[in-house]
Length: 313
Image 1 (cartoon, rainbow, N blue to C red):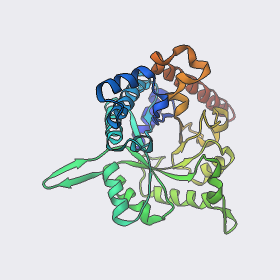
Image 2 (cartoon, rainbow, N blue to C red):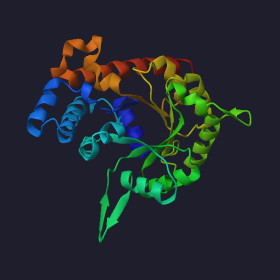
Image 3 (cartoon, rainbow, N blue to C red):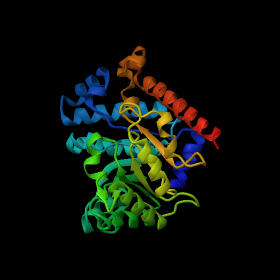
């Protein structure tokens, strides 16, 4: 699966993931009103509004980026109707040729972890029939429970040619409460990164990169530099661009010398761009065009930063 992601990055010249993390407050009034007129101010109405909003954004940016990352919690809050919108979004994005990273942050033990892996990456058997659940290409996994929580996902990835992004150093301010704790004189996130590199050796998706990657926040570029060395063959998913303060110049250390090895996520900076002052002229009626403009600006920022890095070699 990492081959497909890399191919998409090279085709679009954009190591960018659009985070499809919808909130009702992001959705223009005309979309919400249309959904509520049909389904009422109900969970079904909310789900329909989310789906229509996502579809508009995907249509506007699918030729510019290789991947999307729907965050499942933003859909789960609306119950079954939200999950229906999640499933419709995943399938629509795959039909558009996009790589889908399910941001589910699951991690449990034994049969529970295996069930999560089957539901999001693999298959389930019902009688004589085999079905796919949500069927993302990658998912995010929390490794806090250790190998017991991760290996069921790895097994499914090996069977289905799917991939993982394992949380190593997250972008939130309080991540250091645990992740930066010293263990035998080293921060815990380094030890997790080393284990990700080991897991990845069993899931090489190309000559250079594994299907097992890592999540490392854009807000910690110096730590990212260290983790890049520790995990040379892991693709790094980098959240925290834009709204959380990350910029292209801060992110070059996440990439390898081949210009690959990282993919940068922006969520509300793109999907809610129409609410930002710089894109206010688009208005709610052209919210998707504002998202496209935000992607183009992000692409230019990251491209300039990577070009500067190449000149150093």
